Amino acid sequence: MPIAFKEWSVTVRALAEGEQLITLRKGGIREDNKHFEIEHDRFFLYPTFDHQQVGMVRESHRPELGRALEEGVWADGEPPASALDSPTGVPQPERVRIRAWAEVAASYLITDPRAVDALSPYYVWTTDYAEKRLRWKRRHPLHVILLRTYRIPRPVTVKVRDEYLGCRSWLELHRELPFEGTPVLSDEEFERAAEQIEAIASSAVPVLA
Image 1 (spheres, helix red, strand yellow):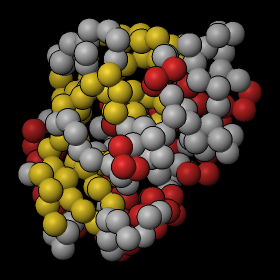
Image 2: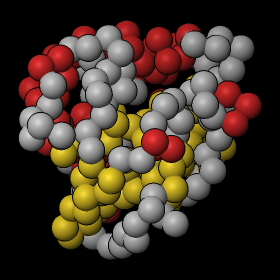
Image 3: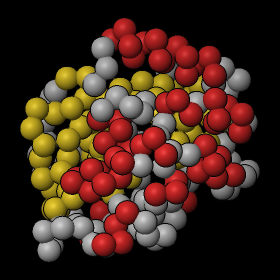
Image 4: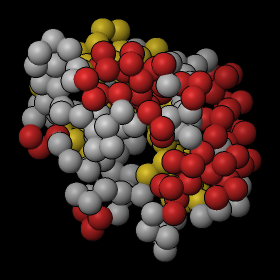
């Protein structure tokens, strides 16, 4: 079955538009051993609404939160009224739209909050939220994962199953999906950004390159 990587719907939208190039991860409570591992190097991007909050997204990208709700197909035809500002996320939609897939281009282990701050041009969260991800489980470094993202020709709607829910990173989707499409950034744009990200993370230990 196709593998998918869960991220906030607004983050998936930003990745699919070339406005975000990295993701930051330590692991959820339902991960194996409660720690994150890069288990796959190519996967679809699965939009979730768990824990997504207005205050955790940079002000310039907050309008995208409303548009990101379009990644869900809701039982009543519209998302719940609390969808844009709920401390625990919102009820999950009946289906989600898969619009993009990604490859791991490189990854690093980060322990320095200054590096997390310097990487802020490459994610849409607030730096406070990004640093909060770093501070959680202080004894463990933060995974910084550079993604090369591709938009598939036509969005595919996938039913939300119980096993997709909860704080986990990886899913097996019960539907065939094509690894087809065009990269959201040109080779030149991506390579230039990748070099800048590597320079920022140069004090970290590369995990995959």
